[in-house]
Length: 306
Image 1 (cartoon, one colour):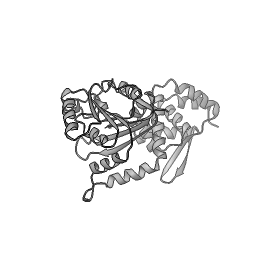
Image 2 (cartoon, rainbow, N blue to C red):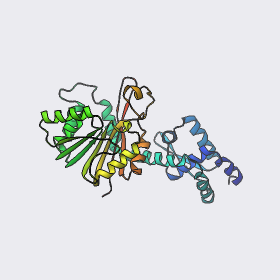
Image 3 (tube, rainbow, N blue to C red):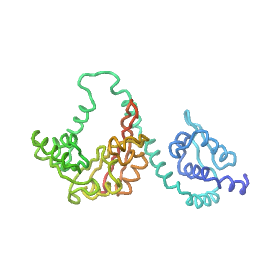
Image 4 (cartoon, rainbow, N blue to C red):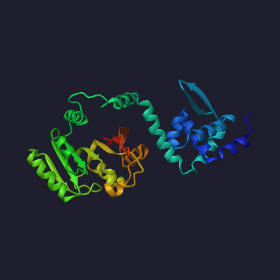
């Protein structure tokens, strides 16, 4: 039996304590711990080694990976959990763990990620992302849709071909006027443009079935407020779709594109959606640009409780 005093000394290190809390919740690989904690492989392996040496963690081989789990005595784990509540990062660790487990369970996503990596490598006449998106939009069936931060309204026009009514919101008078003319030219009477802010859209409460933010949320001064407003205008059981940039370091985007936020991490977006009152939150990285600055596209979906 390992020394209790030595175990307490080991657990006095915040990083080791964070790792122990995570592997107490779920068996995790080093790679998964790297993703959750944002730390290097060598650092995590060293800390796991310390936990194993002191019989606070154990591992087992599964395929090519070792999965680690907590093995500390119950009384010691109780003390560790109390101590962990004093660590500021613990809440973010839990959110990142939920995301990691959701991804692990989603076997279909792994398949489509592989498929997406092959898409476009070979020319196939008539196949394009635009063509596929239009086809998918045709089979969606939402009566009333709000496109928040619609810009010139390309997506709104696609949605209007299927939805009973589409409300496109933008804070640029010129964009709204341009969109109105375009809707008129394309004979889309069910597409309505309104001047307004995505943080406080001029739409009645509980009046829409689907809310979309397409590369718009990173322009909000307070994204949390925009998501709460989306929840306000959605009917119970309604859906939200967020298409945005994955968090990046391309500072020039603030000046070039007037971006307020340099994208969002998957954990950050998922947490914001949950805090806004949404459930069944799902996130995925759906595109990666080959050219610098190598922007990645983040997709988030969720549902308002019925």
